[in-house]
Image (cartoon, rainbow, N blue to C red; front, side):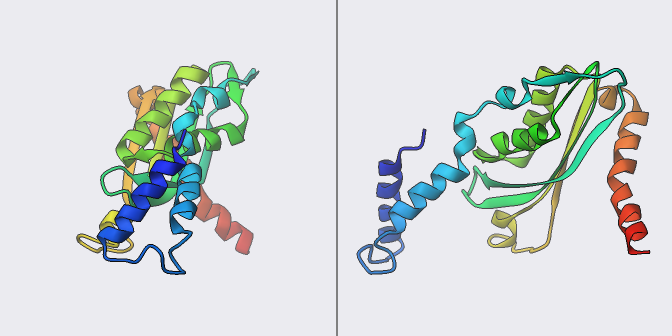
Length: 195
């Protein structure tokens, strides 16, 4: 649970540290606003992915399930600056599937905490494996990190891609190949719609 009082105190100290007047009109309510915002963007600290992945449905066919382009926003734990992008999750069921929105909620659980992209990718794939018990799972994240584009080397538009695979997606190249082909199909699909 976020301690709003401590965050407000920290924001006041930060503003004073950069030479600002915390009592001027534009900043008077900033500590409170930041504390409430942190309650939202770090809500994943109090959540468990298992809650979202608990309800499953039996299926007879075990065909690949892919949810792609799940938008996420997270905070880099090294600089407390945002990184944001898209998550792509696929799994090969073993008799049960989960509601599609639950995969997006799982991404949110791990995105809404101080984080690094590499760890977040592994956490998502491990949660899918643990709670759905599929034949395999694969997760790819692509994100822009403001700690790299806004400061430091200042390279806007650069994207970081991370991949984690387990089970059949790690052991059998055909499943990883299918995952990448399916990710690329949106370009073909969008061209067909334009015709």
